[in-house]
Image 1 (cartoon, rainbow, N blue to C red):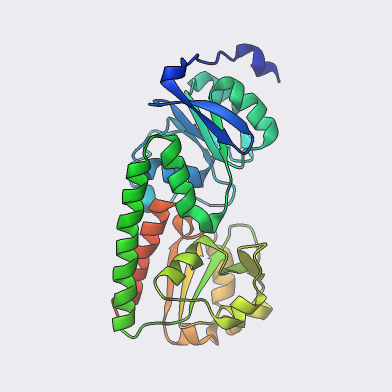
Image 2: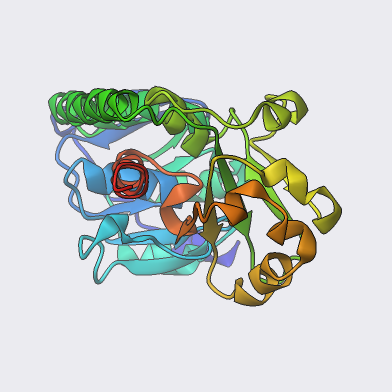
Length: 296
């Protein structure tokens, strides 16, 4: 790639960095990074949660937008393109001192590691807590990551108890609607949001569990299979621009026949944090669960 000749990687003395082994090799990571770039949305969630503000981040392939979990914490962050098509020239110009990402493509890594110390971390959407701890260790914020997880666990236990006291241990369905895609889907027990449901004592319907396997965190659903979405409560995660597709489904007679619709227990939520993420998204989901399940 022609950008190679423009790369000038900043030198680090051994005392200024620590060696981190990762899935694609090892990197000498600065002990106090100032110009972090992240290559995907989930790692952005973790890094911001730990108190850092990256100078730039890639935009998600899977999510339609950045959810409210970030608040104003990422205002001014520069885009480096989509996760699947990083703008490498822009990354060079930004002169990062550390690049972090989940499952970085090997070809990208070969270039990125010449720009700045680059760490590629294994991704498992239900192992987000372990990922937060790993990132905390890399960024010398292990105490902060433990504190964040302790505070999160306290919230989980409080919400679990409140749900139990309200005799509110119901089956919950999580569906998602995309822009430009005719199908919908439900998130299964191998997904980020359903794992959070399980932590607070909730679960998805048995029909959904039986169709699920660990190779994929969701199951696609057409109009003819809408009965699979039925539950005591349904959260509908909407992508920007998905209104037309959602309208097609929600106006269909099969949708209107669902008990969850008849009982008026459908709540629309933001797919920006309900599908995949880390500590900020997890806490935002707890906010929604508290609002919609305990307010009745």
